[in-house]
Image (cartoon, rainbow, N blue to C red):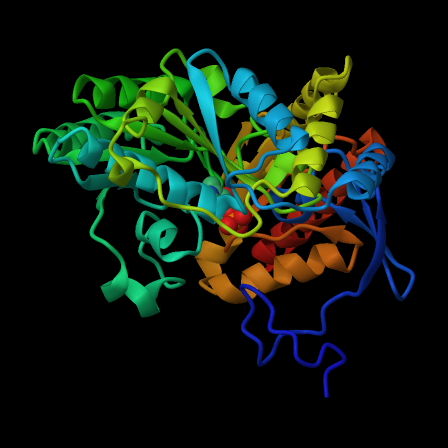
Length: 431
Ligand SMILES: *Cc1c(COP(=O)(O)O)cnc(C)c1O
């Protein structure tokens, strides 16, 4: 009998799942377990954490808010934490973003964005109803967000229930023209309502990266064809790419931005869909049937909104951007050390890539030996045994730390990776 009894874990094949590590507390980039281990959270607890665990300022703000108001219906009623974070975040997103719709997580932020674009066209009497998305994309696990995500093994059981989407090649380096050609073909049908994309880094699809120039070309082409653009910044948002948002690297701006994960600093579930005045105006009419009929019981939960405000306070403090740049620089220097493992006939890694605070590469040995799955598990175990939480996507290893992580801890992660590379190299030379 397992100690975790009735709990059914996410993304886990339960039969042979090892007993999970029992975390009793966290501090900064560290997770402390019941059996006395301290583990470096090198993936920010599924890409959510930005200021570190159990941050005293977030704790204080949560405590204060609970003493005032923990929750209230968000229709016909409103409250200061929601008003405040909505006006601060829309401004933070950039010029043109004027409205924010609250929901509960990344998947619901995407659902709301899809509904906004589809209903925008229906409200304005256009016949556009088709969504375009990139191959290898991931936008969430609800049915709408699954529909716009890559059709892969994880969604296979539901494929006949997912709505029809046009998938095109993402504009990865070397594939930019192919992407634009496929988009042109799709847009010429004149039925496309919107395109959804993960800007600059495609996370769950394998930390695939592409350039701002490539995305600028996509957005510009979409806008020439009256196609709305949804930037799913659920993972890339809140400084992962080096700037506040990935779209801040661009000349052309999307019409809708989906935010979640880092929005509360990684402390509570909250989703937000930010849009332009033009989108909002299509719903701002005498016709009641043209309203956006979507909402959740915990919409704009005051505790979550207070934490989002507190997290944003920390992001706007002097020195915060410097901590982002520091991590990006450290990664860059480490990448230079890794290149020797990625060249020549003895190469053990490939596709070394970096965008801001995210560093990724693929383990080549996995392709050679063909034991893809056991390699993933082996990599995970290798680092956990060294008290480092890295959670590879197949044979893709990546680092995505909380920004409070010290240089010393970064060095510990790097040296773990170097010894792995050395081990793989030794193995390869024996076979
Ligand atoms: C994680 C993620 C989602 C889904 O967010 P949840 O909060 O897990 O529902 C959506 N889009 C992207 C790009 C993500 O990385």
